[in-house]
Length: 138
Picture (cartoon, rainbow, N blue to C red):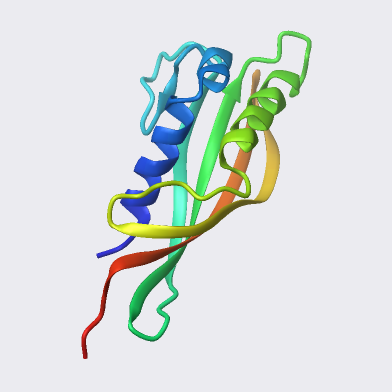
């Protein structure tokens, strides 16, 4: 069993329970947004996972990307970067509770910006190390 879904749930729960973050995006935090969504909004997007087993413990190193979508309104990336800063306050260098895994940490790995017509997007990729709560018995 992989840790990626548990990680996504933990990230969603942490962000959704933060009043300042949710207010900044009008409570629009998604796995898959509607096609006619109002800006700004955040999508918990792409991720990767590699095995990170340690002795008798199954572990994973996961990445998860927050995609922050905004309209510039003359401010360029300001709104998206403000939302990212709020997300960092919730996620960066933290240990989030998970259902079936213990997270050793989650940290911002990289953030980068995109322009897509009149939309501004900040992508913030976080890396987490997660270890199973049950030992592997050989």
